Length: 294
Image 1 (cartoon, rainbow, N blue to C red):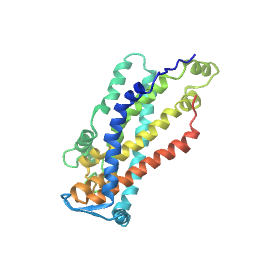
Image 2: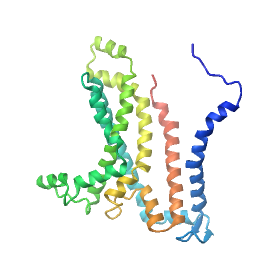
Image 3: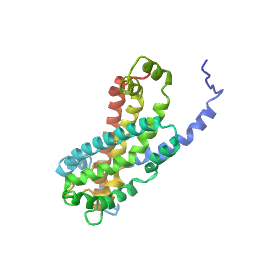
Image 4: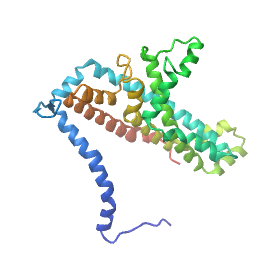
């Protein structure tokens, strides 16, 4: 029988909620409200004079071809990062789950990249693929590949996708491994007795039971690609060449800090916040209906 905790009054549950509510208020609602307020104003670079302009900042955004183009760049980048981070994470989790001897060592090594900050991960990949001093770049030139991501937009996009996805593989691996270990062994043993091959057991039993984990990680990886990859972009390509890797979150920073367009930058942050909230809501409302929960 399930045991439920019952409180005799409302004061103690309220006190338990206060820390989380305070964190949410200070680090989400307050900055979000400040961004919305700034998005309908025009301010000078020093914030000394402010003029209410209504929707003019938003109208100027969507009239800017560079901003409209950053939507396509962000869509390609986020989708590629999510897929390239999820597939190896699942593969490594399946392989590590089968290891008996030295399993702790393998799991620890596979988790190490997640301890690296995105900015540091970007620097590591930048040094490896640098056209002048990069070891991997030298190997590509030896193979006949004309590698120079500083001039080629497609190569720059490929590099930042690989760097961002590599950083997130460990996170996905951890959750997939936990999902695999929660599957009852009796199901796999029964299917093996019935003559199902390992591949068939994976696609008919294991993968459907991992659907909730996969759905959760899909949402997390897309949000990660939208927000947490700023350090990778900034340290590897700075949005270039020719804005080929300028995703939405980087353009928010560039227009606000470098271009000193505070109102326009705030409007961009509001649009980005609305996109992520809407995307998450759509995924949880429609895609979740097709997820199989055991």
